[in-house]
Image (cartoon, rainbow, N blue to C red):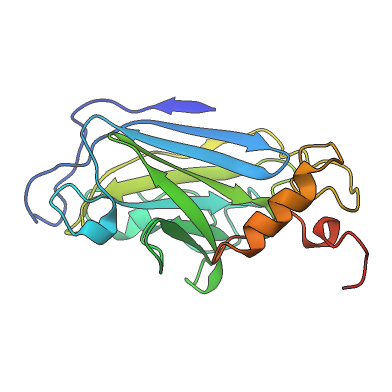
Length: 212
């Protein structure tokens, strides 16, 4: 699903200065591995760890069970100038991770669930949330996003939904979850375990000799 966002709809709810972060589009694509997310902006962005005027701070809220009566409130509803949404949040992705180039996945109460990698381009950021961290989504998820500077949030989406996340059938040794058992699986496994904080798509599938 691709959600366009209007130019110039930013909010200065906290009165903290220039309204720099203006979302242009959010793309959310369900895959057998989980969700691929791209957040694009009309303006240039930099990673938050650089602490620059154009450093972007972003939160991607997920209503994994699509039930607004369960989970926590969307973060954007806690800020002046933003709408309180009919969402029950089970997972949040925070782009200000513990390590540079990482994002944290937390639950509704901000308890740490896992860490994922995040990429920054000139006017966009992208990340993938694996099924192992989503904790659901087989029937699709509802989501929203909010973005801003280090000083304040400045733009947000409404509530949108995805199609179902159709996971591949379990196949032991099929570690990279592309549906094919080949040499790419042990290669993927060795790369992931050597990368700090990276999650495997399916721990059991990656346990090729079933000794764990």
